[in-house]
Image 1 (cartoon, helix red, strand yellow):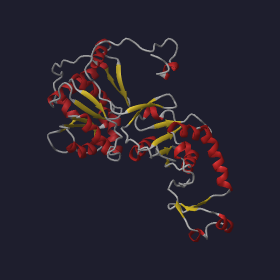
Image 2: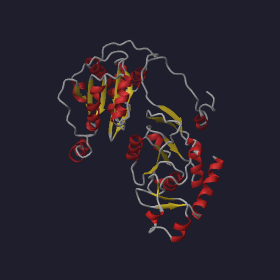
Image 3: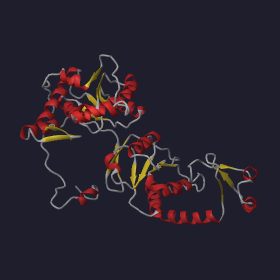
Image 4: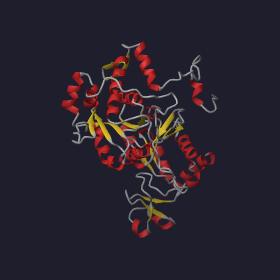
Length: 391
């Protein structure tokens, strides 16, 4: 396993092998073997609630039995649209025990992305959170999905937290969603309670498909591998669009002055930052190393450099922007494309000497700011030229 191909290996501590011998058994057997060896050890810890390996294995068995009752057989796709919660783990191993293939689906996906993944994977069953149930409702008729299983995030909460969540947050945060009364929509808990304790036998081998993972990966500058949502392929004439987080306001302004569509998120929490990037098909620019680890979704570019010049150079190099630079074509303040303006239109807004000498005047149609070429633009262009020369 060469380090040139897998650069993260150089960060392994001394004595940690680059690879190990994996047992030639189906993936779900690892859970069964661990439950047999360490039945009372904690497998999951969730907001103060603990699930042992014995309990997890038993719940996965029961969920597998429930899936078989819905008609899931070997090779059938089961989409899991859940955040990090015990239900995800139960659904994951339950699907494998039933002989199915897990299709993890990012819960931050917008409607069209959920539809694409369900259609493309051929998922027959969807397991989702009540908060995301309305999206699944809308796209189900356009897919091959035959059954929808919904669960509330509070199902594995400790008793006191569950009560407080029910009283204070469930409705406010969009988790209190009624299920449509139809035979193909089920509550996770009801399905589990009505299922047999153990699934029927399924012949599954170590070479059978266990996981159908969408997306692709890249290496961030931080060294992490980051999952990307399926993205529309850019035409040769198109430049990528960016979303700079709160730490990169100056970089956002300079990218705009170079002519690149760069939004700036001054106060967005990470969840909203990621959602906006997905909705608007933008690359996130950040200095937060934890962001691509926690949110393995859209394109995330992590900048190690601390100086503006180095950050700008890194972005230009990484995305091949040099041939697409169009200086002063976009407003540095609000990101809108600039429009040509006549002298008469801006006569009251610029100094008389500028009005007399400027060969080209531009106005931002959004904020009204007027731009012209002068000594300040010459200085800015000199900085840009130095950066581009190294890119």
